[in-house]
Length: 429
Image (cartoon, rainbow, N blue to C red; front, side, top):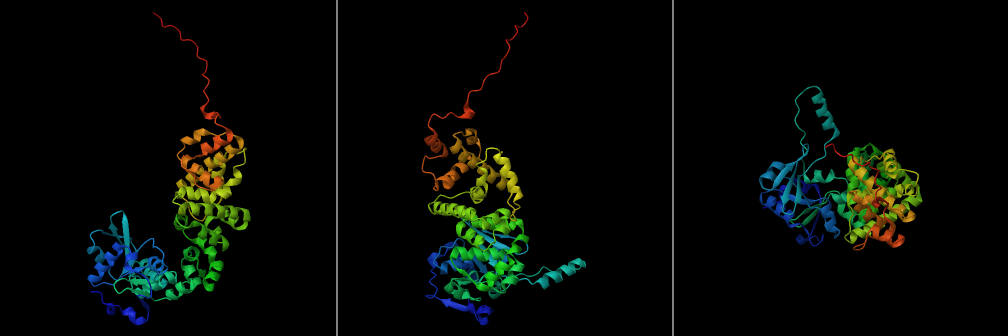
Protein backbone atom coordinates (compact mmCIF):
# COMPACT_ATOMS: atom_id res chain seq x y z
CA UNK A 1 0.00 0.00 0.00
CA UNK A 2 1.28 3.46 -0.91
CA UNK A 3 2.52 5.25 2.21
CA UNK A 4 3.02 8.98 1.84
CA UNK A 5 5.22 9.06 4.93
CA UNK A 6 7.89 7.22 2.93
CA UNK A 7 8.44 10.37 0.86
CA UNK A 8 10.96 12.60 2.69
CA UNK A 9 10.02 15.59 0.52
CA UNK A 10 6.75 15.98 2.42
CA UNK A 11 8.81 17.51 5.21
CA UNK A 12 10.11 20.19 2.81
CA UNK A 13 6.77 21.93 2.81
CA UNK A 14 5.00 21.38 -0.51
CA UNK A 15 1.47 22.68 -0.85
CA UNK A 16 -0.85 19.66 -0.94
CA UNK A 17 -4.29 20.38 -2.32
CA UNK A 18 -6.81 17.65 -1.55
CA UNK A 19 -10.23 17.04 -3.08
CA UNK A 20 -12.61 18.74 -3.47
CA UNK A 21 -10.24 21.68 -3.77
CA UNK A 22 -8.68 20.64 -7.08
CA UNK A 23 -11.74 19.28 -8.99
CA UNK A 24 -9.70 16.49 -10.68
CA UNK A 25 -11.70 13.28 -11.03
CA UNK A 26 -10.41 9.83 -11.94
CA UNK A 27 -12.80 9.47 -14.87
CA UNK A 28 -10.96 12.36 -16.57
CA UNK A 29 -7.68 10.43 -16.45
CA UNK A 30 -6.60 7.83 -19.00
CA UNK A 31 -7.48 4.45 -17.44
CA UNK A 32 -4.20 2.93 -18.61
CA UNK A 33 -2.24 5.66 -16.83
CA UNK A 34 -4.22 4.86 -13.69
CA UNK A 35 -3.38 1.15 -14.10
CA UNK A 36 0.33 2.01 -14.11
CA UNK A 37 0.02 4.25 -11.06
CA UNK A 38 -2.04 1.71 -9.10
CA UNK A 39 0.29 -1.20 -9.88
CA UNK A 40 3.42 0.74 -8.89
CA UNK A 41 1.66 1.88 -5.72
CA UNK A 42 0.81 -1.70 -4.76
CA UNK A 43 4.50 -2.59 -5.26
CA UNK A 44 5.49 0.09 -2.73
CA UNK A 45 6.53 2.87 -5.12
CA UNK A 46 5.30 6.42 -5.41
CA UNK A 47 3.83 7.25 -8.83
CA UNK A 48 2.09 10.46 -9.94
CA UNK A 49 0.75 12.18 -13.00
CA UNK A 50 3.08 15.04 -13.93
CA UNK A 51 3.50 17.91 -16.34
CA UNK A 52 0.94 19.23 -18.77
CA UNK A 53 -1.66 16.60 -17.89
CA UNK A 54 -2.02 17.94 -14.33
CA UNK A 55 -2.10 21.52 -15.57
CA UNK A 56 -4.80 20.78 -18.13
CA UNK A 57 -6.93 18.78 -15.68
CA UNK A 58 -6.75 21.67 -13.24
CA UNK A 59 -7.92 24.03 -15.99
CA UNK A 60 -10.74 21.75 -17.11
CA UNK A 61 -9.00 20.98 -20.42
CA UNK A 62 -8.57 17.54 -21.97
CA UNK A 63 -4.87 16.52 -21.73
CA UNK A 64 -3.15 15.36 -24.89
CA UNK A 65 -0.76 13.05 -23.02
CA UNK A 66 -0.70 11.44 -19.60
CA UNK A 67 2.88 11.16 -18.35
CA UNK A 68 3.77 9.34 -15.14
CA UNK A 69 6.74 9.97 -12.82
CA UNK A 70 7.83 7.56 -10.12
CA UNK A 71 10.62 6.77 -7.66
CA UNK A 72 10.97 3.33 -9.26
CA UNK A 73 14.04 2.93 -11.47
CA UNK A 74 13.62 2.01 -15.17
CA UNK A 75 14.61 -1.61 -14.60
CA UNK A 76 12.14 -1.92 -11.74
CA UNK A 77 9.36 -0.48 -13.89
CA UNK A 78 10.09 -2.84 -16.78
CA UNK A 79 9.94 -5.90 -14.52
CA UNK A 80 6.39 -5.02 -13.54
CA UNK A 81 4.99 -4.47 -17.05
CA UNK A 82 5.33 -7.06 -19.79
CA UNK A 83 4.43 -4.41 -22.38
CA UNK A 84 7.17 -1.99 -21.25
CA UNK A 85 10.27 -0.95 -23.19
CA UNK A 86 13.23 1.03 -21.86
CA UNK A 87 14.45 3.79 -24.20
CA UNK A 88 17.10 6.50 -24.06
CA UNK A 89 20.78 6.54 -23.22
CA UNK A 90 21.80 9.30 -20.83
CA UNK A 91 18.43 9.32 -19.10
CA UNK A 92 16.40 6.18 -19.53
CA UNK A 93 12.62 6.30 -19.86
CA UNK A 94 10.06 3.53 -20.01
CA UNK A 95 7.35 3.39 -22.65
CA UNK A 96 4.42 1.20 -21.66
CA UNK A 97 2.48 0.10 -24.75
CA UNK A 98 -1.27 -0.44 -24.90
CA UNK A 99 -3.70 -1.43 -27.70
CA UNK A 100 -4.41 1.16 -30.35
CA UNK A 101 -0.75 2.30 -30.55
CA UNK A 102 -1.11 4.09 -27.24
CA UNK A 103 2.07 4.73 -25.26
CA UNK A 104 2.23 5.97 -21.67
CA UNK A 105 5.63 7.42 -20.78
CA UNK A 106 6.93 6.57 -17.32
CA UNK A 107 9.99 8.41 -16.02
CA UNK A 108 11.95 8.14 -12.82
CA UNK A 109 12.06 11.36 -10.78
CA UNK A 110 15.10 13.34 -11.94
CA UNK A 111 17.36 15.94 -10.43
CA UNK A 112 19.17 18.76 -12.25
CA UNK A 113 22.74 17.87 -13.22
CA UNK A 114 25.07 20.72 -12.26
CA UNK A 115 27.72 22.10 -14.55
CA UNK A 116 30.32 21.30 -11.89
CA UNK A 117 29.43 17.60 -11.98
CA UNK A 118 29.69 17.47 -15.76
CA UNK A 119 32.97 19.43 -15.75
CA UNK A 120 34.48 17.16 -13.10
CA UNK A 121 33.59 14.05 -15.07
CA UNK A 122 34.96 15.56 -18.28
CA UNK A 123 38.23 16.37 -16.50
CA UNK A 124 38.61 12.78 -15.29
CA UNK A 125 37.90 11.45 -18.78
CA UNK A 126 40.50 13.82 -20.25
CA UNK A 127 43.07 12.36 -17.84
CA UNK A 128 42.15 8.85 -18.89
CA UNK A 129 40.81 8.03 -15.45
CA UNK A 130 37.86 5.75 -14.85
CA UNK A 131 34.57 7.56 -14.23
CA UNK A 132 31.19 6.50 -12.98
CA UNK A 133 28.04 7.57 -14.82
CA UNK A 134 26.38 10.57 -13.20
CA UNK A 135 23.29 9.47 -11.31
CA UNK A 136 20.48 11.62 -12.76
CA UNK A 137 17.72 10.33 -10.51
CA UNK A 138 16.28 12.40 -7.71
CA UNK A 139 13.29 13.14 -5.52
CA UNK A 140 9.86 14.52 -6.43
CA UNK A 141 10.95 17.94 -5.18
CA UNK A 142 14.13 17.91 -7.29
CA UNK A 143 12.10 16.73 -10.27
CA UNK A 144 9.69 19.65 -9.87
CA UNK A 145 12.44 22.26 -9.60
CA UNK A 146 14.27 21.07 -12.72
CA UNK A 147 11.22 21.81 -14.92
CA UNK A 148 10.85 24.99 -16.98
CA UNK A 149 7.75 26.72 -15.66
CA UNK A 150 5.74 26.42 -12.47
CA UNK A 151 2.39 25.43 -14.00
CA UNK A 152 4.06 22.39 -15.60
CA UNK A 153 5.70 21.25 -12.34
CA UNK A 154 2.58 20.07 -10.48
CA UNK A 155 2.13 16.42 -9.47
CA UNK A 156 -1.16 14.59 -9.01
CA UNK A 157 -1.16 11.67 -6.58
CA UNK A 158 -4.10 9.61 -7.81
CA UNK A 159 -3.91 7.27 -4.82
CA UNK A 160 -4.33 10.05 -2.27
CA UNK A 161 -6.33 12.24 -4.71
CA UNK A 162 -4.04 15.20 -4.05
CA UNK A 163 -2.22 17.82 -6.12
CA UNK A 164 1.35 18.41 -4.89
CA UNK A 165 2.99 21.78 -5.55
CA UNK A 166 6.64 22.51 -4.70
CA UNK A 167 7.12 25.61 -6.88
CA UNK A 168 4.01 27.81 -6.59
CA UNK A 169 2.30 26.48 -9.67
CA UNK A 170 -1.15 26.48 -8.07
CA UNK A 171 -0.97 30.21 -7.41
CA UNK A 172 0.22 30.85 -10.96
CA UNK A 173 -2.67 28.84 -12.38
CA UNK A 174 -5.04 30.95 -10.30
CA UNK A 175 -3.38 34.17 -11.51
CA UNK A 176 -3.22 32.89 -15.12
CA UNK A 177 0.50 33.54 -15.19
CA UNK A 178 3.49 31.83 -16.83
CA UNK A 179 6.47 31.99 -14.49
CA UNK A 180 9.91 30.46 -14.98
CA UNK A 181 11.31 28.27 -12.20
CA UNK A 182 14.51 29.97 -11.05
CA UNK A 183 16.22 32.94 -12.68
CA UNK A 184 14.87 33.38 -16.26
CA UNK A 185 18.17 34.68 -17.67
CA UNK A 186 20.07 31.72 -16.23
CA UNK A 187 17.46 29.20 -17.37
CA UNK A 188 17.26 30.70 -20.89
CA UNK A 189 21.05 30.72 -21.17
CA UNK A 190 21.17 27.05 -20.16
CA UNK A 191 18.57 26.16 -22.79
CA UNK A 192 17.34 28.90 -25.19
CA UNK A 193 14.41 26.73 -26.35
CA UNK A 194 12.80 27.53 -22.97
CA UNK A 195 12.11 31.01 -24.39
CA UNK A 196 9.94 29.43 -27.06
CA UNK A 197 8.16 27.21 -24.55
CA UNK A 198 7.30 30.14 -22.30
CA UNK A 199 5.74 31.99 -25.23
CA UNK A 200 3.93 28.86 -26.47
CA UNK A 201 2.27 28.14 -23.15
CA UNK A 202 1.25 31.77 -22.66
CA UNK A 203 -0.28 31.85 -26.16
CA UNK A 204 -2.19 28.59 -25.96
CA UNK A 205 -3.48 29.13 -22.44
CA UNK A 206 -4.17 32.85 -22.80
CA UNK A 207 -1.92 33.54 -19.78
CA UNK A 208 0.28 36.55 -19.05
CA UNK A 209 4.05 36.15 -18.81
CA UNK A 210 5.69 37.22 -15.56
CA UNK A 211 7.50 40.55 -16.10
CA UNK A 212 10.94 39.21 -15.15
CA UNK A 213 10.61 36.36 -17.63
CA UNK A 214 9.25 38.69 -20.32
CA UNK A 215 12.26 40.99 -19.99
CA UNK A 216 14.55 37.98 -20.36
CA UNK A 217 12.65 36.90 -23.50
CA UNK A 218 13.35 40.29 -25.08
CA UNK A 219 17.00 40.48 -24.00
CA UNK A 220 17.95 36.87 -24.74
CA UNK A 221 15.69 35.85 -27.63
CA UNK A 222 18.67 35.90 -29.98
CA UNK A 223 20.07 32.85 -28.16
CA UNK A 224 17.56 30.71 -30.05
CA UNK A 225 19.83 31.01 -33.09
CA UNK A 226 22.49 29.09 -31.15
CA UNK A 227 20.19 26.12 -30.55
CA UNK A 228 20.36 23.01 -32.71
CA UNK A 229 18.62 23.55 -36.04
CA UNK A 230 17.12 20.07 -35.86
CA UNK A 231 15.70 20.82 -32.42
CA UNK A 232 14.19 24.10 -33.61
CA UNK A 233 12.57 22.19 -36.46
CA UNK A 234 11.04 19.72 -33.98
CA UNK A 235 9.71 22.58 -31.86
CA UNK A 236 8.23 24.29 -34.91
CA UNK A 237 6.46 21.07 -35.86
CA UNK A 238 4.75 21.12 -32.44
CA UNK A 239 3.33 24.53 -33.25
CA UNK A 240 2.19 23.49 -36.72
CA UNK A 241 0.45 20.39 -35.33
CA UNK A 242 -2.02 22.21 -33.06
CA UNK A 243 -3.23 25.74 -32.28
CA UNK A 244 -0.77 27.33 -34.68
CA UNK A 245 -2.16 30.85 -34.96
CA UNK A 246 -1.79 32.02 -31.33
CA UNK A 247 1.80 30.77 -31.12
CA UNK A 248 2.87 32.39 -34.41
CA UNK A 249 1.16 35.59 -33.27
CA UNK A 250 3.09 35.77 -29.99
CA UNK A 251 6.38 34.92 -31.74
CA UNK A 252 5.75 37.83 -34.12
CA UNK A 253 4.76 40.28 -31.37
CA UNK A 254 7.91 39.59 -29.37
CA UNK A 255 10.21 39.59 -32.43
CA UNK A 256 11.25 35.95 -31.99
CA UNK A 257 10.18 34.47 -35.36
CA UNK A 258 13.30 35.93 -37.01
CA UNK A 259 15.47 33.68 -34.83
CA UNK A 260 13.59 30.63 -36.14
CA UNK A 261 12.74 31.33 -39.80
CA UNK A 262 15.54 33.73 -40.70
CA UNK A 263 14.78 36.43 -43.27
CA UNK A 264 11.18 35.39 -43.82
CA UNK A 265 10.63 35.71 -40.07
CA UNK A 266 12.05 39.24 -40.18
CA UNK A 267 9.82 40.09 -43.14
CA UNK A 268 6.73 38.90 -41.28
CA UNK A 269 7.76 40.95 -38.22
CA UNK A 270 8.47 44.18 -40.10
CA UNK A 271 5.95 44.20 -42.98
CA UNK A 272 2.41 44.69 -41.71
CA UNK A 273 0.76 43.49 -44.93
CA UNK A 274 2.67 40.21 -44.87
CA UNK A 275 1.95 39.51 -41.20
CA UNK A 276 -1.74 40.38 -41.71
CA UNK A 277 -1.91 37.97 -44.66
CA UNK A 278 -0.28 35.21 -42.60
CA UNK A 279 -2.60 35.84 -39.65
CA UNK A 280 -5.65 35.67 -41.91
CA UNK A 281 -4.55 32.36 -43.44
CA UNK A 282 -3.83 30.84 -40.03
CA UNK A 283 -7.25 32.00 -38.84
CA UNK A 284 -8.86 30.19 -41.77
CA UNK A 285 -6.72 27.11 -41.13
CA UNK A 286 -7.66 27.11 -37.43
CA UNK A 287 -11.37 27.22 -38.24
CA UNK A 288 -10.96 24.42 -40.78
CA UNK A 289 -9.07 22.33 -38.20
CA UNK A 290 -11.85 22.80 -35.65
CA UNK A 291 -14.27 21.66 -38.34
CA UNK A 292 -12.33 18.43 -38.78
CA UNK A 293 -10.33 19.47 -41.87
CA UNK A 294 -6.63 19.26 -41.06
CA UNK A 295 -3.50 19.88 -43.08
CA UNK A 296 -0.46 17.67 -43.44
CA UNK A 297 2.92 18.92 -42.21
CA UNK A 298 4.00 19.74 -45.77
CA UNK A 299 0.77 21.65 -46.40
CA UNK A 300 1.31 23.61 -43.18
CA UNK A 301 4.84 24.59 -44.26
CA UNK A 302 3.49 25.68 -47.65
CA UNK A 303 0.79 27.72 -45.90
CA UNK A 304 3.30 29.39 -43.55
CA UNK A 305 5.52 30.43 -46.48
CA UNK A 306 2.65 31.33 -48.85
CA UNK A 307 2.51 35.09 -48.05
CA UNK A 308 6.26 35.31 -48.64
CA UNK A 309 6.03 33.39 -51.94
CA UNK A 310 2.85 35.04 -53.23
CA UNK A 311 4.52 37.98 -54.93
CA UNK A 312 6.37 35.59 -57.26
CA UNK A 313 3.09 34.17 -58.59
CA UNK A 314 2.25 37.23 -60.69
CA UNK A 315 5.48 37.09 -62.67
CA UNK A 316 5.41 35.43 -66.08
CA UNK A 317 9.13 35.93 -66.72
CA UNK A 318 10.47 33.37 -64.25
CA UNK A 319 10.70 29.65 -63.75
CA UNK A 320 8.50 29.59 -60.66
CA UNK A 321 9.77 26.29 -59.25
CA UNK A 322 13.45 27.21 -59.62
CA UNK A 323 12.90 30.70 -58.24
CA UNK A 324 11.09 29.45 -55.14
CA UNK A 325 13.73 26.78 -54.59
CA UNK A 326 16.61 29.28 -54.81
CA UNK A 327 14.85 31.94 -52.73
CA UNK A 328 14.01 29.38 -50.05
CA UNK A 329 17.67 28.41 -49.69
CA UNK A 330 18.63 32.09 -49.41
CA UNK A 331 16.38 32.53 -46.35
CA UNK A 332 18.89 30.72 -44.12
CA UNK A 333 16.32 29.58 -41.60
CA UNK A 334 17.74 28.73 -38.16
CA UNK A 335 15.36 25.78 -37.98
CA UNK A 336 16.80 23.03 -40.17
CA UNK A 337 13.91 22.07 -42.42
CA UNK A 338 14.78 18.69 -43.99
CA UNK A 339 15.51 18.74 -47.70
CA UNK A 340 12.54 16.52 -48.58
CA UNK A 341 10.06 18.61 -46.56
CA UNK A 342 11.45 21.79 -48.12
CA UNK A 343 11.30 20.34 -51.64
CA UNK A 344 7.72 19.14 -51.20
CA UNK A 345 6.58 22.49 -49.76
CA UNK A 346 8.19 24.29 -52.72
CA UNK A 347 6.45 21.93 -55.16
CA UNK A 348 3.07 22.53 -53.49
CA UNK A 349 3.64 26.29 -53.70
CA UNK A 350 4.70 25.99 -57.34
CA UNK A 351 1.53 24.14 -58.31
CA UNK A 352 -0.56 26.52 -56.22
CA UNK A 353 1.08 29.52 -57.90
CA UNK A 354 0.38 28.00 -61.30
CA UNK A 355 -3.28 27.60 -60.36
CA UNK A 356 -3.57 31.22 -59.25
CA UNK A 357 -1.85 32.39 -62.43
CA UNK A 358 -4.16 30.20 -64.54
CA UNK A 359 -7.24 31.91 -63.12
CA UNK A 360 -5.83 35.18 -64.44
CA UNK A 361 -4.63 33.97 -67.86
CA UNK A 362 -7.14 31.22 -68.65
CA UNK A 363 -4.27 28.83 -69.42
CA UNK A 364 -3.51 25.90 -67.14
CA UNK A 365 -0.81 23.20 -67.28
CA UNK A 366 -3.11 20.26 -66.64
CA UNK A 367 -0.16 17.85 -66.72
CA UNK A 368 0.46 19.02 -63.14
CA UNK A 369 -2.47 16.83 -62.11
CA UNK A 370 -0.10 13.90 -62.47
CA UNK A 371 2.23 15.33 -59.83
CA UNK A 372 2.10 13.67 -56.42
CA UNK A 373 1.42 16.96 -54.61
CA UNK A 374 -1.28 18.29 -56.91
CA UNK A 375 -4.08 17.23 -54.53
CA UNK A 376 -2.39 19.06 -51.64
CA UNK A 377 -2.07 22.20 -53.74
CA UNK A 378 -5.72 21.81 -54.78
CA UNK A 379 -6.68 21.66 -51.11
CA UNK A 380 -4.63 24.75 -50.20
CA UNK A 381 -6.07 26.64 -53.18
CA UNK A 382 -9.44 26.82 -51.45
CA UNK A 383 -7.97 28.04 -48.16
CA UNK A 384 -5.85 30.82 -49.69
CA UNK A 385 -8.22 31.90 -52.51
CA UNK A 386 -11.72 30.96 -51.35
CA UNK A 387 -10.93 31.24 -47.62
CA UNK A 388 -12.63 27.93 -46.87
CA UNK A 389 -12.12 24.18 -47.38
CA UNK A 390 -13.50 22.71 -50.63
CA UNK A 391 -17.04 21.39 -50.66
CA UNK A 392 -17.68 17.79 -51.64
CA UNK A 393 -16.98 17.29 -55.34
CA UNK A 394 -15.37 20.73 -55.62
CA UNK A 395 -11.86 21.20 -57.00
CA UNK A 396 -9.67 23.80 -58.64
CA UNK A 397 -10.70 22.43 -62.03
CA UNK A 398 -14.40 22.99 -61.33
CA UNK A 399 -13.63 26.58 -60.29
CA UNK A 400 -11.43 27.14 -63.34
CA UNK A 401 -14.06 25.84 -65.76
CA UNK A 402 -16.83 27.83 -64.11
CA UNK A 403 -14.82 30.98 -64.87
CA UNK A 404 -13.29 30.16 -68.25
CA UNK A 405 -15.98 27.90 -69.67
CA UNK A 406 -16.51 24.19 -70.14
CA UNK A 407 -14.99 24.15 -73.61
CA UNK A 408 -11.53 25.21 -72.63
CA UNK A 409 -8.99 23.05 -74.40
CA UNK A 410 -6.17 21.57 -72.41
CA UNK A 411 -2.84 22.59 -73.97
CA UNK A 412 -1.17 19.41 -72.72
CA UNK A 413 -3.79 17.22 -74.41
CA UNK A 414 -3.54 18.59 -77.95
CA UNK A 415 -2.99 15.87 -80.57
CA UNK A 416 0.63 15.69 -81.61
CA UNK A 417 1.58 16.18 -85.24
CA UNK A 418 3.21 13.11 -86.70
CA UNK A 419 6.56 13.61 -88.37
CA UNK A 420 7.12 12.64 -92.05
CA UNK A 421 8.10 9.04 -92.58
CA UNK A 422 9.42 7.90 -95.98
CA UNK A 423 7.72 4.84 -97.49
CA UNK A 424 9.35 1.55 -96.66
CA UNK A 425 11.40 -0.05 -99.41
CA UNK A 426 10.16 -3.47 -100.49
CA UNK A 427 12.31 -6.31 -99.24
CA UNK A 428 14.32 -8.11 -101.97
CA UNK A 429 12.88 -11.41 -103.08
